[in-house]
Length: 100
Image (cartoon, rainbow, N blue to C red; front, side, top):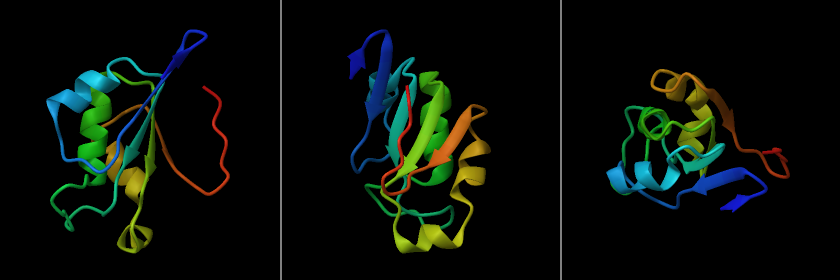
């Protein structure tokens, strides 16, 4: 989504994909599903490091992790994503507003 010189890219349930990297290329914010923490990979869902890899390879400015399942509450998913992505990493919360 692009408006007024800013862009937002987002994923649904996904695995790592070059097509998703291309979709997100250069976005100001990547809203990315990240259902499970590292070590609990489930087919069709990203882990924090994979979400971070997508963000890094796409060259996005910021990464917002969302679609977290309860096991993700037990881990620092933002720190895990930062192992791959040096930009700002945030974790979605109900009613959170993030200016682009």
